[in-house]
Image (cartoon, rainbow, N blue to C red; front, side, top):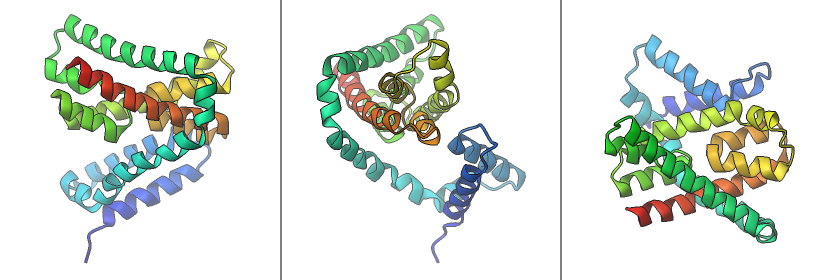
Length: 218
């Protein structure tokens, strides 16, 4: 019999949390918190849980490839606003990489930790492969990606509101560029379809650009 209790538990918790509208924390983050509490309370070994929920991890690859569909369907938006969009994408990627290196050097952070931090604004499957290619620690990279996404999911709309940015195009591009899938999920929850499309396009292109730039640098 296939061991899938972790898979079933994760999906059940996510579906329940998603339906509780009074919770302001993103469903993915809340699901993670509940899972951690359960594992710690009942002293369940993480490796045991991971083995039973590994099918979710395996789906990350196909899910990333599937992102090519919205990229293809909305190619006209990219072409129409190509100068502003791509200039913003390049600035976003370069800023993320340079600030990581500079701050790491200032605080005397180990170089391997710095390389693990570099792809933190890229969606997990791509970030892990970048981390492997440039000598980082993939497991740490995955943690940094999740933390970046959670921060973006919780605060991105609030920060943009402070700066009085109301454009759905600008909002979607900013969120997708900096907080990948988790940030994009908040656009879905807020029922902003245009933001969802642009955020999805942004996280795809940012993933490609980050891969090219990181490999070029190293």
